[in-house]
Image (cartoon, rainbow, N blue to C red; front, side, top):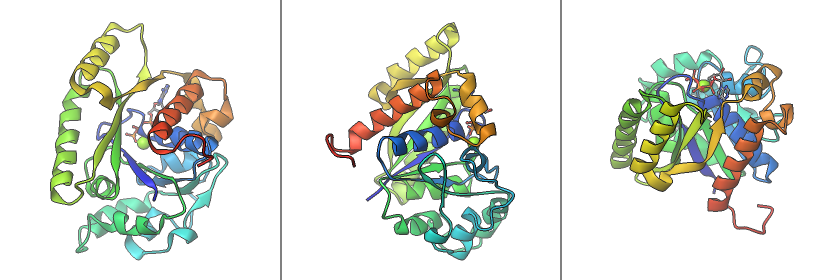
Amino acid sequence: MARTIAVANQKGGVGKTTTSVNLSASLALSGSRVLLVDLDPQGNATMGSGVDKSTVERSTYDWLIDGVPLAELAVKCHGGYEVVPSNTDLTAAEVELLQLDNRERRLAECLEAAVDYDFVIIDCPPSLNILTLNALLAADSVLIPMQCEYYALEGLSALLETVEGVKQSGNPKLAIEGLLRTMYDPRNSLTRDVSRQLIQYFGDKVFRTVIPRNVRLAEAPSHGLPAILYDRQSRGAVAYMALAGEIRRKYVPSGTGE
Ligand SMILES: Nc1ncnc2c1ncn2[C@@H]1O[C@H](COP(=O)(O)OP(=O)(O)OP(=O)(O)O)[C@@H](O)[C@H]1O
Ligand SMILES: [Mg+2]
């Protein structure tokens, strides 16, 4: 069975998509079979994976609303993983889902077909909307990227309450995979303070790996590549490989290719 990880934080621009794409590529390079689900109508994970969202014929929308089979949707990309692409069509799904009986469980049902993967990574939109709820109901765990800045902790409590609500109302197995410090700048004292607080409150739920602020991570998507293929020596690429290692050590028995 695949380990399904929702990458979520309702705060915008904290590194959800950068993490989804680079974690997917790093897990794939380490030998795991990975499916990346772009659950954001912005389609950034799609473009960052080198798939042109404007030419996509079938997207996450068709999967969630019309039940088009996964095998017809998943696109193999340079990063060595497969992606279910998305574009603005998915905005309509938000409204259409509200009219369906099992509206919060559509993605969970769709993912029952994802038997050939070791990891499913879901890139969530910057909102606690019906799409994100679908991700949380489908996931084994949630990975929370966050910038270590003043307001970060405030948003975090709303997200953690939602996770708790989903656990109680329909997905008891949902766990916190970890809090990931992104765009980390150790020279900034506020960053260090917030980071310290995070570790104080959440202990080993904070990933040891820290993602530095690194321009290569910001450049790579414009080439449709994960950082590991764009500049494998870059600090950003190395950090995401370390994150993949941290996660694989929890779920992949050592000594096996998979
Ligand atoms: N570690 C990093 N170093 C430098 N730039 C980064 C880093 N992580 C992300 N960025 C840049 O910051 C911006 C926001 O990142 P990203 O798109 O991953 O965030 P997001 O949480 O997915 O945003 P949204 O909420 O809009 O979906 C992007 O331009 C991205 O290239
Ligand atoms: Mg995003």
